Structure formats: structure tokens, C-alpha cells
Image (cartoon, rainbow, N blue to C red; front, side, top):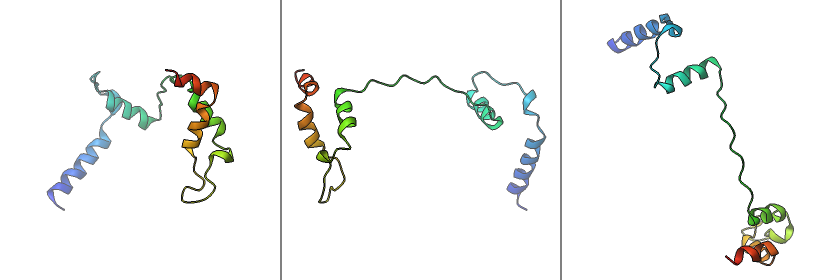
Length: 102
């Protein structure tokens, strides 16, 4: 057994004998505290951020992305969205004309 293996084994044994609940923690050592909580099974939940409002373009794409008129039917791009055709159609809608004015 090499010196490294002996040291590793001794360290591993010493680790198992230490009582981690009694040790003092520095307050800025957040990572190790978080890891301990994760190991124990405690979860910290963050508040969810409110979702952003969809833009007029996003709404248009969401509503029309499944329509055959905007999906390539053949060729190398078969099954993909024809975004150029969608953009032209969007600019003809009132919402598209409104955003074009800016």
C-alpha cells in the first residue's frame, strides 16, 4: 500500500468519525452549508419571477406555427417553419403594422 493510499484511507476514516452537527461554521461559508442541506434533503425554494408578456410577434407565431401554410411541405426544409412567410403575413396584421411604425 502506497503512502498516498494510507493517507487517503486514514483521512476517510477520520471523516466518518467527525460529528459535523457540532462544528462552528463561518457565516460566509454558504456553499458548504448549502451542500450539507442538499445532502440532508432540505430544499431551498426561490420565488418564481413573473413571466414576461408575449410580444405581438410571439403571439402570432404561437397561434400560427401549426398551420400548414407556414410549414415547408417538401424539400430540404420539410417540416420546418417558414419564418420569412410568417413575417410577411405578420406585417400585414394590425399588430404588425403597429410595430412597423416605430
